[in-house]
Length: 302
Figure 1 (cartoon, rainbow, N blue to C red):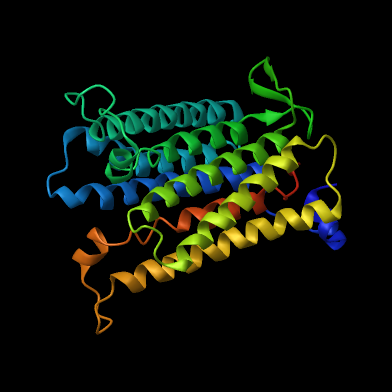
Figure 2: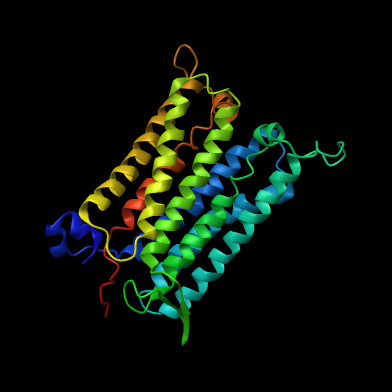
C-alpha cells in the first residue's frame, strides 16, 4: 500500500494516470527546462554571455525535450527510453559540477596572500556556488526514477537488459534522502543570498527555520526502516507543505521588492534585484516530496 493510501485510505481505489516514478520523471523534465531559463536570466546581467555560459542555457531546454521524448518511447520501447534518459541525466550531473567549479573559481582570489584566496565573504558575494548543483540534483533524481526496482521497495534497480544494482536501502528511502539533500542546498543558498542584507528583515529568518525543519524530517523518514506510521507521515507532509508555502511567500516578497513605489514593473529591477525565481526552489522541493507518496507500481500497458 502506498503512503498516499496510508494517509487517505480511499486513495487505494484510485486509478492514477501516473506512477510515482513517472510523475517524478515528468517533473525532472520540467525542472531541466526551467533551470535553463533561470540560468539565462542570471547570466544575462553581464550583457555579454560567455561561450561556456551557453552550455546550461541550451542544455536545460534540450534535456527537457529529450526527456519528454524518452517518456513517449517508454510506452513501447522501455530499454531505449531508459538509455536515453540515463544519458541525459548523467550529462546534467556533469553540467552541474562544471558550473559549480566555474562559479567557485570566479569567487576566489588566486593571487591573494595565503589564507585570503578563499574567504566566506568572497563566497557570499561571488556567483552562487551551489546554484549549478541544481542540474546535478535533477540528474541524480532522474536516474533514480528512470531505473525501475524489480519490485517496490526491494532496493534492486534494473539498469537495462540483465544488469542490476543493489542499493543498501529502498528507492523510497533514497527519494527521502534526496529531498533532504535538495532542501539543504536550498537552505544554504538562501542563507548566503540573505547574508548580503545582514538578515535585517525578520521575514528572512522564515526560510532558514522552515528549511532546517524540512531538511531534518525527510532525513529521518529515510533513516527509518520499514513503513512510516500516520503520525510520521503527517509530520512529513506538514514539512513539505511548509516548504511550498515558504516558496510562494518568498516569491511574493521578492517580486514586491522589485516593483517601483508606484507598483510598476521595470525589467531591469527584476534582473538585478531580488531573484524572484529562487524561492520557488523551496516550493519545488515540497512538491517533489509529496510526489514520493504516490503509488510506486506502474500500470500495465498494452
